Amino acid sequence: MLRVAVIGARGQLGSDLVSRLGAQAIPLGHADIDISEASSISLALDRDRPDVVINCAAYNFVDKAETERDQAMLTNRRGPGLLADYCREHDLKLVHVGTDYVYDGQTGDRPWTEADEPQPLSTYALSKYSGEQLVRAHCPRHFVVRTCGLYGRNAAHGKGNFVETMLRLGRERSELSIVSDQRCTPTATADLASAILDLMKTEAYGLYHATNSGDCSWFEFATEILRRAQLKTVVKPITTADYGARARRPSYSVLNCAKLERVLGWKMPSWREALANYLIDREQSKRH
Ligand SMILES: NC(=O)c1ccc[n+]([C@@H]2O[C@H](COP(=O)([O-])OP(=O)(O)OC[C@H]3O[C@@H](n4cnc5c(N)ncnc54)[C@H](OP(=O)(O)O)[C@@H]3O)[C@@H](O)[C@H]2O)c1
Image (cartoon, rainbow, N blue to C red; front, top):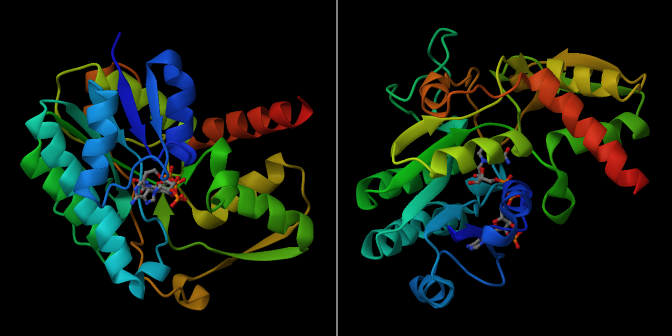
Protein backbone atom coordinates (compact mmCIF):
# COMPACT_ATOMS: atom_id res chain seq x y z
CA MET A 1 0.00 0.00 0.00
CA LEU A 2 1.33 3.41 -1.05
CA ARG A 3 1.95 5.64 1.98
CA VAL A 4 1.20 9.30 1.32
CA ALA A 5 2.33 12.11 3.62
CA VAL A 6 -0.08 15.04 3.39
CA ILE A 7 1.54 18.24 4.66
CA GLY A 8 -0.92 21.00 5.57
CA ALA A 9 -3.33 18.23 6.52
CA ARG A 10 -5.71 20.52 8.41
CA GLY A 11 -6.11 23.02 5.56
CA GLN A 12 -8.80 22.99 2.88
CA LEU A 13 -7.06 20.82 0.29
CA GLY A 14 -5.05 18.78 2.78
CA SER A 15 -8.09 17.65 4.72
CA ASP A 16 -9.91 16.54 1.55
CA LEU A 17 -6.84 14.55 0.49
CA VAL A 18 -6.57 12.91 3.91
CA SER A 19 -10.21 11.84 3.93
CA ARG A 20 -9.95 10.38 0.40
CA LEU A 21 -6.71 8.56 1.14
CA GLY A 22 -8.09 6.86 4.25
CA ALA A 23 -5.56 4.39 5.66
CA GLN A 24 -2.95 5.41 3.08
CA ALA A 25 -2.72 8.92 4.53
CA ILE A 26 -0.05 10.16 6.89
CA PRO A 27 -1.66 13.47 7.92
CA LEU A 28 0.88 16.10 8.99
CA GLY A 29 -0.48 19.35 10.44
CA HIS A 30 1.56 22.41 11.31
CA ALA A 31 2.13 21.00 14.82
CA ASP A 32 3.67 17.83 13.29
CA ILE A 33 5.95 19.47 10.74
CA ASP A 34 7.28 22.93 9.95
CA ILE A 35 8.36 22.91 6.30
CA SER A 36 10.59 25.94 6.80
CA GLU A 37 12.92 23.87 9.05
CA ALA A 38 15.03 21.08 7.53
CA SER A 39 15.28 19.31 10.91
CA SER A 40 11.50 19.29 11.33
CA ILE A 41 11.06 17.80 7.84
CA SER A 42 13.61 15.04 8.55
CA LEU A 43 12.11 14.27 11.95
CA ALA A 44 8.58 13.81 10.59
CA LEU A 45 9.40 12.08 7.30
CA ASP A 46 12.21 9.81 8.60
CA ARG A 47 9.76 8.58 11.22
CA ASP A 48 6.78 8.07 8.88
CA ARG A 49 8.67 6.91 5.76
CA PRO A 50 6.13 7.84 3.06
CA ASP A 51 6.36 6.87 -0.63
CA VAL A 52 4.80 10.14 -1.76
CA VAL A 53 4.76 13.62 -0.19
CA ILE A 54 1.96 16.06 -1.02
CA ASN A 55 2.68 19.62 0.09
CA CYS A 56 -0.50 21.61 0.72
CA ALA A 57 1.12 23.85 3.34
CA ALA A 58 1.45 27.48 2.37
CA TYR A 59 1.32 31.07 3.54
CA ASN A 60 -1.88 32.13 1.77
CA PHE A 61 -2.44 35.74 2.94
CA VAL A 62 -2.16 37.53 -0.39
CA ASP A 63 -2.48 41.11 0.90
CA LYS A 64 -0.66 40.63 4.21
CA ALA A 65 2.31 39.16 2.33
CA GLU A 66 3.12 42.66 1.06
CA THR A 67 4.18 43.55 4.63
CA GLU A 68 5.11 40.02 5.83
CA ARG A 69 7.53 39.20 3.02
CA ASP A 70 9.88 37.12 5.18
CA GLN A 71 7.08 34.91 6.49
CA ALA A 72 5.69 34.38 2.99
CA MET A 73 9.16 33.52 1.64
CA LEU A 74 9.91 31.12 4.50
CA THR A 75 6.78 29.03 3.94
CA ASN A 76 6.30 29.42 0.20
CA ARG A 77 9.91 29.41 -1.02
CA ARG A 78 12.25 27.92 1.58
CA GLY A 79 9.71 25.24 2.66
CA PRO A 80 9.13 23.71 -0.81
CA GLY A 81 12.87 24.00 -1.50
CA LEU A 82 13.71 21.94 1.59
CA LEU A 83 11.00 19.40 0.79
CA ALA A 84 12.38 19.09 -2.75
CA ASP A 85 15.86 18.35 -1.37
CA TYR A 86 14.50 15.75 1.06
CA CYS A 87 12.40 14.03 -1.62
CA ARG A 88 15.32 13.94 -4.09
CA GLU A 89 17.66 12.47 -1.46
CA HIS A 90 15.08 9.81 -0.55
CA ASP A 91 13.82 9.23 -4.11
CA LEU A 92 10.23 10.18 -3.21
CA LYS A 93 7.51 11.59 -5.41
CA LEU A 94 6.64 15.17 -4.43
CA VAL A 95 3.36 16.87 -5.31
CA HIS A 96 3.51 20.62 -4.72
CA VAL A 97 0.62 23.04 -5.18
CA GLY A 98 1.12 26.35 -6.98
CA THR A 99 -1.11 29.26 -7.90
CA ASP A 100 -2.65 31.00 -10.92
CA TYR A 101 -1.34 34.28 -9.43
CA VAL A 102 2.08 33.54 -10.95
CA TYR A 103 0.66 35.03 -14.17
CA ASP A 104 0.19 38.71 -14.88
CA GLY A 105 -3.13 38.62 -16.73
CA GLN A 106 -1.76 39.77 -20.09
CA THR A 107 -2.66 36.88 -22.44
CA GLY A 108 -5.45 38.77 -24.16
CA ASP A 109 -8.06 36.43 -22.69
CA ARG A 110 -6.49 33.14 -23.83
CA PRO A 111 -6.26 30.58 -21.01
CA TRP A 112 -2.66 30.27 -19.83
CA THR A 113 -0.77 27.10 -20.68
CA GLU A 114 2.15 25.57 -18.78
CA ALA A 115 4.46 26.88 -21.54
CA ASP A 116 3.57 30.52 -20.80
CA GLU A 117 6.06 32.62 -18.86
CA PRO A 118 4.95 33.64 -15.34
CA GLN A 119 5.24 37.26 -14.29
CA PRO A 120 4.29 37.48 -10.59
CA LEU A 121 2.64 40.78 -9.64
CA SER A 122 2.75 40.51 -5.83
CA THR A 123 4.98 39.31 -3.00
CA TYR A 124 2.68 36.32 -2.44
CA ALA A 125 2.83 35.40 -6.14
CA LEU A 126 6.62 35.78 -6.19
CA SER A 127 7.02 33.62 -3.07
CA LYS A 128 4.84 30.88 -4.56
CA TYR A 129 6.60 31.07 -7.93
CA SER A 130 10.06 30.84 -6.41
CA GLY A 131 8.95 27.82 -4.32
CA GLU A 132 7.66 25.92 -7.33
CA GLN A 133 10.86 26.74 -9.26
CA LEU A 134 12.93 25.12 -6.49
CA VAL A 135 10.73 22.01 -6.56
CA ARG A 136 11.06 21.74 -10.34
CA ALA A 137 14.83 22.27 -10.25
CA HIS A 138 15.72 20.05 -7.28
CA CYS A 139 13.29 17.12 -7.23
CA PRO A 140 13.17 14.98 -10.38
CA ARG A 141 10.00 13.09 -9.36
CA HIS A 142 7.84 16.22 -8.97
CA PHE A 143 4.32 17.21 -9.87
CA VAL A 144 3.79 20.96 -9.56
CA VAL A 145 0.06 21.62 -9.78
CA ARG A 146 -1.06 25.24 -10.25
CA THR A 147 -4.63 25.89 -9.20
CA CYS A 148 -6.97 28.79 -8.41
CA GLY A 149 -9.49 30.18 -5.90
CA LEU A 150 -9.77 27.12 -3.67
CA TYR A 151 -12.76 26.42 -1.48
CA GLY A 152 -13.11 23.34 0.69
CA ARG A 153 -15.15 22.07 3.58
CA ASN A 154 -12.37 22.49 6.13
CA ALA A 155 -12.16 26.25 5.68
CA ALA A 156 -13.46 26.68 9.22
CA HIS A 157 -10.12 25.42 10.58
CA GLY A 158 -8.23 27.89 8.46
CA LYS A 159 -8.93 31.30 7.09
CA GLY A 160 -12.34 30.76 5.50
CA ASN A 161 -12.85 30.89 1.75
CA PHE A 162 -14.72 33.01 -0.78
CA VAL A 163 -17.86 30.86 -0.74
CA GLU A 164 -18.15 30.88 3.05
CA THR A 165 -17.48 34.64 3.13
CA MET A 166 -20.22 35.31 0.56
CA LEU A 167 -22.71 33.13 2.45
CA ARG A 168 -21.94 34.95 5.70
CA LEU A 169 -22.02 38.45 4.17
CA GLY A 170 -25.14 37.52 2.20
CA ARG A 171 -26.94 36.80 5.47
CA GLU A 172 -25.60 39.94 7.19
CA ARG A 173 -26.02 42.56 4.46
CA SER A 174 -28.58 43.56 1.86
CA GLU A 175 -25.97 44.63 -0.72
CA LEU A 176 -22.45 43.49 -1.63
CA SER A 177 -19.88 45.06 -3.98
CA ILE A 178 -17.73 42.45 -5.72
CA VAL A 179 -14.87 42.82 -8.20
CA SER A 180 -15.97 42.10 -11.77
CA ASP A 181 -12.74 42.73 -13.72
CA GLN A 182 -10.73 39.68 -12.60
CA ARG A 183 -11.50 36.42 -14.43
CA CYS A 184 -10.36 33.01 -13.24
CA THR A 185 -11.77 29.59 -12.30
CA PRO A 186 -12.65 29.08 -8.63
CA THR A 187 -11.97 25.45 -7.78
CA ALA A 188 -13.41 22.99 -5.26
CA THR A 189 -10.72 21.20 -3.26
CA ALA A 190 -12.85 18.03 -3.54
CA ASP A 191 -12.23 17.97 -7.32
CA LEU A 192 -8.60 19.05 -7.06
CA ALA A 193 -7.97 16.26 -4.52
CA SER A 194 -9.33 13.67 -6.97
CA ALA A 195 -7.08 15.01 -9.74
CA ILE A 196 -3.98 15.03 -7.52
CA LEU A 197 -4.57 11.49 -6.31
CA ASP A 198 -4.88 10.18 -9.88
CA LEU A 199 -1.89 12.20 -11.09
CA MET A 200 0.28 11.04 -8.20
CA LYS A 201 -0.10 7.40 -9.31
CA THR A 202 1.51 8.15 -12.69
CA GLU A 203 5.15 8.75 -13.64
CA ALA A 204 4.17 11.75 -15.80
CA TYR A 205 6.23 14.22 -13.78
CA GLY A 206 6.15 17.94 -14.49
CA LEU A 207 4.11 21.10 -14.32
CA TYR A 208 0.30 21.04 -14.52
CA HIS A 209 -2.63 23.41 -14.45
CA ALA A 210 -5.58 22.01 -12.50
CA THR A 211 -8.84 23.89 -11.96
CA ASN A 212 -12.54 23.29 -12.42
CA SER A 213 -13.58 24.09 -15.99
CA GLY A 214 -15.04 27.29 -17.45
CA ASP A 215 -14.33 30.72 -16.01
CA CYS A 216 -16.03 33.63 -14.31
CA SER A 217 -15.41 36.91 -12.53
CA TRP A 218 -15.62 37.09 -8.74
CA PHE A 219 -18.83 39.09 -9.27
CA GLU A 220 -20.36 36.24 -11.31
CA PHE A 221 -19.18 33.68 -8.76
CA ALA A 222 -20.70 35.64 -5.86
CA THR A 223 -23.97 36.06 -7.76
CA GLU A 224 -24.17 32.30 -8.36
CA ILE A 225 -23.35 31.48 -4.71
CA LEU A 226 -26.11 33.75 -3.41
CA ARG A 227 -28.61 32.56 -6.04
CA ARG A 228 -28.02 28.92 -5.11
CA ALA A 229 -28.28 29.75 -1.42
CA GLN A 230 -31.57 31.58 -2.17
CA LEU A 231 -30.29 34.78 -0.56
CA LYS A 232 -31.82 37.98 -1.94
CA THR A 233 -28.70 40.13 -1.38
CA VAL A 234 -28.04 42.56 -4.24
CA VAL A 235 -24.57 42.08 -5.77
CA LYS A 236 -23.02 45.15 -7.41
CA PRO A 237 -20.00 44.88 -9.76
CA ILE A 238 -17.00 47.06 -8.88
CA THR A 239 -13.51 47.37 -10.36
CA THR A 240 -10.25 46.16 -8.84
CA ALA A 241 -9.25 49.82 -8.48
CA ASP A 242 -12.48 50.58 -6.56
CA TYR A 243 -11.81 47.66 -4.21
CA GLY A 244 -8.26 48.86 -3.59
CA ALA A 245 -6.57 45.69 -2.28
CA ARG A 246 -2.97 46.05 -1.16
CA ALA A 247 -1.57 43.33 -3.44
CA ARG A 248 -1.87 43.42 -7.24
CA ARG A 249 -3.77 40.51 -8.79
CA PRO A 250 -3.95 39.31 -12.40
CA SER A 251 -6.99 40.51 -14.34
CA TYR A 252 -7.11 37.22 -16.23
CA SER A 253 -5.72 33.99 -14.77
CA VAL A 254 -7.83 31.29 -16.40
CA LEU A 255 -5.69 28.14 -16.69
CA ASN A 256 -5.72 25.76 -19.66
CA CYS A 257 -5.90 22.27 -18.12
CA ALA A 258 -5.62 20.21 -21.34
CA LYS A 259 -2.30 18.65 -20.30
CA LEU A 260 -3.77 17.31 -17.05
CA GLU A 261 -6.88 16.08 -18.86
CA ARG A 262 -4.72 14.14 -21.36
CA VAL A 263 -2.80 12.40 -18.56
CA LEU A 264 -5.85 11.67 -16.37
CA GLY A 265 -8.30 10.85 -19.16
CA TRP A 266 -10.99 12.96 -17.48
CA LYS A 267 -11.88 16.63 -17.03
CA MET A 268 -12.71 18.42 -13.81
CA PRO A 269 -16.38 19.52 -13.59
CA SER A 270 -17.48 23.07 -14.40
CA TRP A 271 -17.18 25.67 -11.65
CA ARG A 272 -21.00 25.85 -11.47
CA GLU A 273 -21.34 22.10 -10.94
CA ALA A 274 -18.51 22.09 -8.39
CA LEU A 275 -20.15 24.92 -6.46
CA ALA A 276 -23.52 23.13 -6.49
CA ASN A 277 -21.88 19.96 -5.13
CA TYR A 278 -20.09 21.93 -2.41
CA LEU A 279 -23.31 23.59 -1.25
CA ILE A 280 -25.21 20.27 -1.22
CA ASP A 281 -22.42 18.61 0.75
CA ARG A 282 -22.35 21.56 3.16
CA GLU A 283 -26.12 21.30 3.79
CA GLN A 284 -25.95 17.54 4.28
CA SER A 285 -23.11 17.73 6.77
CA LYS A 286 -24.97 20.43 8.75
CA ARG A 287 -27.92 18.01 9.15
CA HIS A 288 -25.75 15.18 10.52
N1 LIG B 1 -6.69 29.07 -1.13
C1 LIG B 1 -6.62 29.44 -2.39
O1 LIG B 1 -7.48 30.14 -2.90
C2 LIG B 1 -5.48 28.96 -3.26
C3 LIG B 1 -5.40 29.37 -4.61
C4 LIG B 1 -4.34 28.89 -5.40
C5 LIG B 1 -3.41 28.04 -4.86
N2 LIG B 1 -3.51 27.68 -3.54
C6 LIG B 1 -2.50 26.77 -3.01
O2 LIG B 1 -3.13 25.53 -2.72
C7 LIG B 1 -2.50 24.92 -1.59
C8 LIG B 1 -3.55 24.54 -0.56
O3 LIG B 1 -4.26 25.71 -0.18
P1 LIG B 1 -5.38 25.68 0.98
O4 LIG B 1 -6.34 26.80 0.70
O5 LIG B 1 -5.88 24.29 1.16
O6 LIG B 1 -4.48 26.09 2.23
P2 LIG B 1 -4.93 26.38 3.74
O7 LIG B 1 -6.34 25.95 3.97
O8 LIG B 1 -4.52 27.79 4.05
O9 LIG B 1 -3.99 25.38 4.53
C9 LIG B 1 -2.61 25.56 4.59
C10 LIG B 1 -2.10 24.78 5.78
O10 LIG B 1 -0.68 24.91 5.81
C11 LIG B 1 -0.28 25.00 7.18
N3 LIG B 1 1.02 25.64 7.26
C12 LIG B 1 1.31 26.95 7.13
N4 LIG B 1 2.63 27.15 7.26
C13 LIG B 1 3.19 25.94 7.49
C14 LIG B 1 4.52 25.49 7.71
N5 LIG B 1 5.56 26.35 7.73
N6 LIG B 1 4.73 24.16 7.90
C15 LIG B 1 3.70 23.30 7.89
N7 LIG B 1 2.42 23.65 7.71
C16 LIG B 1 2.16 24.97 7.50
C17 LIG B 1 -1.37 25.83 7.82
O11 LIG B 1 -1.39 25.60 9.20
P3 LIG B 1 -1.69 26.86 10.21
O12 LIG B 1 -3.01 27.41 9.79
O13 LIG B 1 -1.68 26.21 11.54
O14 LIG B 1 -0.55 27.81 9.97
C18 LIG B 1 -2.64 25.30 7.12
O15 LIG B 1 -3.23 24.23 7.81
C19 LIG B 1 -1.45 25.93 -1.10
O16 LIG B 1 -0.22 25.63 -1.69
C20 LIG B 1 -1.95 27.24 -1.67
O17 LIG B 1 -0.91 28.19 -1.84
C21 LIG B 1 -4.52 28.10 -2.75
